[in-house]
Length: 428
Image 1 (cartoon, rainbow, N blue to C red):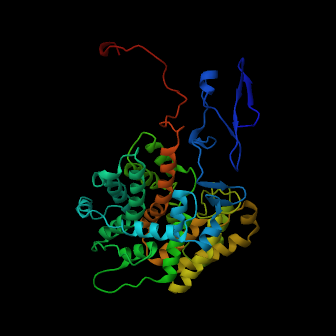
Image 2 (cartoon, one colour):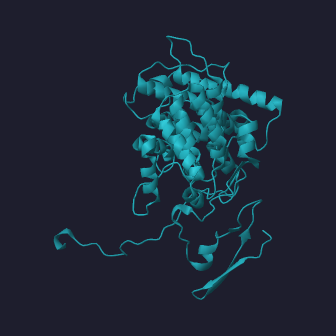
Image 3 (cartoon, rainbow, N blue to C red):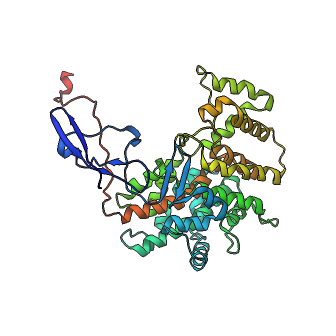
């Protein structure tokens, strides 16, 4: 904190606010003592200008289109690493040695089974329950089955809970899907990779053999890597806020899943597919592009541009080739994919899109990939939650170990009725 303080003057007050500086990124004004010094709070709906914590996990530069996990660019991790290695990196801060990775993979692999009684928990849901509703309920219920990993003050229990969450979330996700379509649950297989095991639990049936396609397995692993963490977004902040009260880790992750369920957060790739379906055929694209350029038309092209990335989404750059590989591998004949590929071409060449920096984002490509792989749209957000669990767990652990962390307690600007006296019923 070697920076000169920021002087704030006005309303007869003059205060010095400390200025903090991270390893990279904008400086931060420390306002923790502002209320004590001025008897005033700050007003920041959505906390878009407020740093709620100090973190060493993920860094985003939206202007430059950069995303880094523990300092490593997402492009390098996507091309040279795998999801299990990324999980280790997020949790422990460094890439593992071969021995460390082998042990980590073994530990996660041998925690993938669920307590058998949890199977009966699923039958309490309606047959047509949304998979995300099942996810929220089942993940929250884990605290009732794994009492030996709910003491947040015990580092060993915290780590056991972390491993369990990362290991069991694919099993829960696949079971949520199987339950919704009336198929039998498929148990995890320890000889498969993390992504391969998930695909097997999703799409295999007892009546026939299922062989994991390596192209799809790689695409699934890549989607997990790209969605593993994304700094202090709404769901991550929800996990931290829930955790700040001392809630057990399973409850905190369930809270994050519930937040992610919101269409403004985790439903972007589904919205993108709905838009492609609305366009319908390639010959109608010019009509919708014209509408997108019309300021008076409420229509928006979903899957282009990003709230955080003002240039391009670095995850989309990685995902683009994978989308094309998956479509080629599966040889799918669907007009929706023709629309998507033509829209992509226009967005990368049209001066309007280039000037506005409306490049295809990760949701554009992930929606296309997941649909081609056979995932129903209601499972898209479930997959997002599956991948993001690793980041949530890393953020939760960091928060628990932060000595400056306090229970979350945002303030408000009260605009209701001032104090008044009660009026008896007969006099009203």
